[in-house]
Length: 474
Image 1 (tube, rainbow, N blue to C red):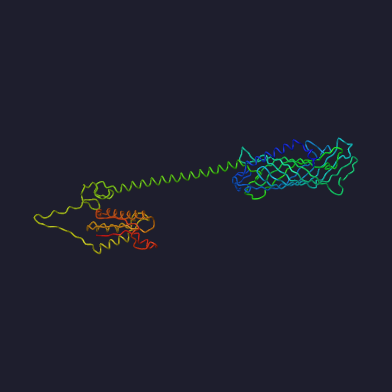
Image 2 (cartoon, helix red, strand yellow):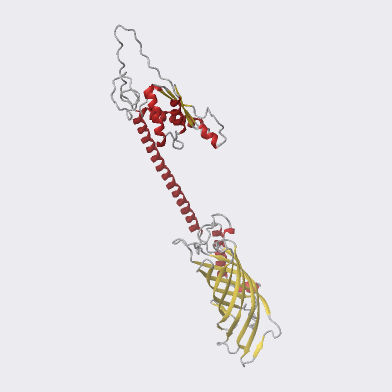
């Protein structure tokens, strides 16, 4: 092996190890991301800093090309090399963004001849490469494109070691064929050094264009040991092939992944999510402002309905006789009550008109109670209840009765809300009776909320009974 190392160019080795060092150092600076050079709509985004499990790391390749029995800076014992066909395959495990291990196989044939030294023993040779197997470290020199989100090309360099099995055959100056190993083959160590480019044509396939310099640890690869000078043989291989990514097709390839673009995409996604959240918040604020405006408008409307400019107890909206002088007794429509006739002179006479609550009066009140309906969860009286309340207002106005209205609810909702609703419903009944001619001073409206149930609140029927307004006529 020491003969081989002496023959490998020192500048090539230094350049290879320098590149490897840089590639390994760069690999520690990038992890995982969300964009790949071959990303499509069906491909998952790799989560940042999630390790290599988010990527496809295994691939295999096939290639074919031309073999020469020489290198650009050196040749074997024959001064002319004739190109021949070679082919091979490999299996690769990508361990990081920049480094992978690759098992190579190569087969083919190498030819050469002497054109300037006819005095040598042989004028040509032909060596069959039965097989060669090598393990290489492959360094991806660049998988980042600073001008675009996607990376399309990755240059790489590889170096390794392996074994090569071959059979040389020579042709003498007289034209006789000579088998170097008639009954077998030769196996030697060799060192391959690769340079190449990979082009990403889809999320699964890369085009591989490469050139390999191969240093054999023997001087009999061409079947000739040119004594006394030991000249380790070498050959080169230029190839084109396809690399196929293995594993989950929804994951990106680690070797082609553009980490800075992935980081940028992650920031864009988070910015979009934040913008969406801000838009939703703004929409909620706009709706809240609209609700506040509607509430203020409702408060203004309620204030206008409660306004009583002349102070007679009848709201202006129901007052048929506005601007009644202060202290004037009025009926439910806000109009002054008839003045009783003056007493007869010189007679101590007191006129008292009494009204009694009859069964018919009770029937009218009970009928109004049974037919009293409100909008759900509100104090608005439904229109079908108004005729029954009109009859109650008529007996209050004509007979001078007083009425107590008591609002009650079931236990659904908070105590405060139920108390408020029961009071508002009793007040709504009072306002309706007053608008129909009843005297507001003779009507009392109170709310008891859920505090006085008359049935169980555990059933729908019981809760229905508890939602009521009681009329007490006196």
